[in-house]
Image 1 (tube, helix red, strand yellow):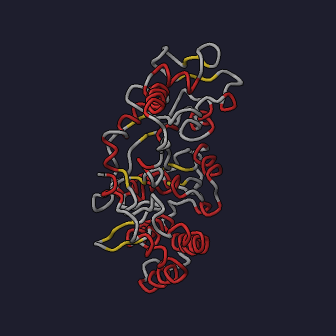
Image 2 (image 1 turned 90 degrees about the horizontal axis):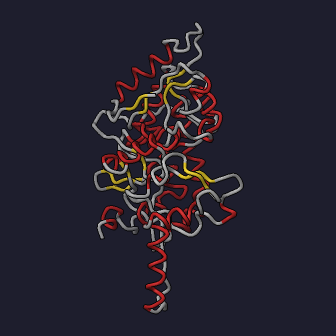
Image 3 (image 1 turned 45 degrees about the vertical axis):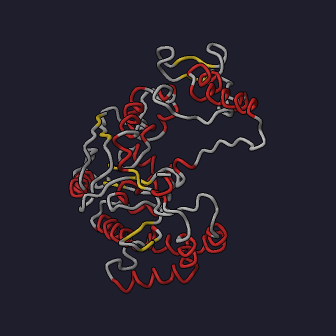
Length: 354
């Protein structure tokens, strides 16, 4: 297994896809491999490729002062053109339209697929559980396989990145204290908070319990992740009484050596490649949730149908009239109301600075 912080360009990635599709990488003399596959999980399928166009699945985007939902943005159209090209070239597994994540992983494990997206913490040679999914499943199937872990691709205009895991980002985890709490009780609450989140002893005790009773160390004590003993888990309350704040000091308890190195890059250098929504209604200040509840299911059907048809060539993504008709349909069926509510929501970057 090899690692690089250098990113491939889309042109370089296409050379890889061509080689894996046409180069008989499994040496069986058959035309049965593909450069890339995908599944019904967009993030696990297309995250970095979409990022090379400067946008992310689920997140609205500002294009020259105009707000777009991701699925009608000009960047999304360019992505669909690229995916259609890959399909026509035979690089994209034609079965991708029927696959779920597990079925896609099975194909990757079997060496049928050459390129895919994965979370960094899947790259853990010490985890028994992760041996059932790529990339750690691959050596179990083929001990001679070579795997390269790389960062997201660079698009033709220099863009790259991945969508923030959740839209809320720094606003996702909230800790509330009742305004009627007196000062003495507030001090005790904050001391407990600090102990179970920021003190190594408290972090270990609240997450994993007592050494030898509830967990054992995976490596050197206090320098490696704890492993819960058989029968110890959420039913015993471990992990429920903290906010799981990852600090430079306690992150070593969460990841072993390999994923920890990737995490350290991702949480420093990699932060500049995180793609956030342009606007988001964090505090329910608009009617976005109500409008989405009313129209969301129908809008999802519209974009999904167009998504797959565009990639496999059932609609011509290069035809302006086809694209415009799709966008107008999405807007007419409730999308315009969604965007109107989003226009009232805070700009994420501005809110993050406060």
